[in-house]
Image (cartoon, rainbow over all chains, first blue to last red; front, top):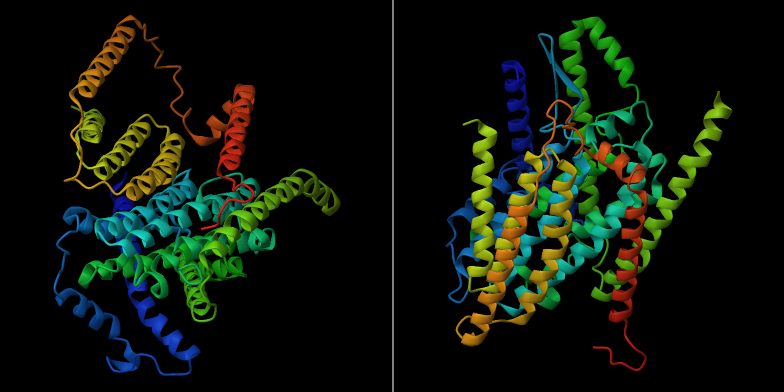
Length: 359
Length: 172
């Protein structure tokens, strides 16, 4: 690889990594503010203006607490649990396209960690691994409640992965590509997948709530039944890693939702903006600024879905466990298969008809 | 040595080591975790062979689903390390004989096998990519593919039937 491309790629990866962490950090602040707003109270307002330094204060507290390992716990696996949770949460952002290309002296570099032709499968594989952090940690704690939380997490994740994969297949049938960059590029010009796949979108977002262990599917850490679920025995920064991994998962899944269904970095009128910018500032600067606007739009969409997660958390009560399983296996999976059949029929029969009629 | 080759050796050593640890570790949970590591190193080998689809599917299916269920079951078994019964000597001897015989058979088969050579000029390095793999599966190998899917469907129906609660059975 050329040196310039290498440098731009490195900067992209570092910026993406830092942004993921910062967004996850400020999601904790956002969550409290949203909770405060919904419950008609102030939320954090002591540390810094509007409580903006609250995440830093929390991190400081987490770091300086005693790092405690229970006597009968399996020591190495007890440490490995939160590390695995954090690792798998951070892995997924490698294939997300955060913007179109960046141009520098004749080189064009895609604003994406790795452009892979199996992008969405990679994300799916990383999501499938996410459960190990919880299971290993829950078992290593040597506590019945932790183990039950871990078992719940495992069965929940496996059940909802099936429906999630099936809802993705409808998208793949339309785009005939597994590459996330390609899927975004096809949604250019207001051609967003949400208009073609509303049912698939609802199934996907439900399953991503379940995969992130968020309310209404936060059975693994259900405090009314299981004390604290899989992280009952955890304290200090290890607990911090578990909670932080949840927020990173939220950001990554929001980013995936906006890539798959809401056009990623595409926004209405982007061609007009692009032409105006390139005419005014030249093909390099104009192009780069247009790309940055697209990236900002992308982050806006992702942040909206993070807000949606919080909104749902403070609105809907928790499911009971049998309801959760019934919803996953008996409702979402048949619906997803129905969606696949409808999509297949539409791609085969309806699409040629409409194209013939339009021409 | 070129980097790919040295990476191959490193990965192979890791594979063999983690596969050995699966059977050598006392704690079954550790065994399962080492088995997951083995699957990861195998996926690394697939990537070195330019078969990305196979690599990711290996991780999704084996590491992501099957091993989770393994871990699930073993965690429920609640095996205490100090209460573990020492296995009878006869079982150890039988295991050694069976394993040794299998090794000899495999080694003999390997010695007899002629590995067909390939022409580097005609070799298509893109064959492992998902587009080519899909075309190959649905064009040249359609019947085996469909038969395998029917087999999986039968297995799934059987599993559902086994797991079904019979009439009059207690709910717990």
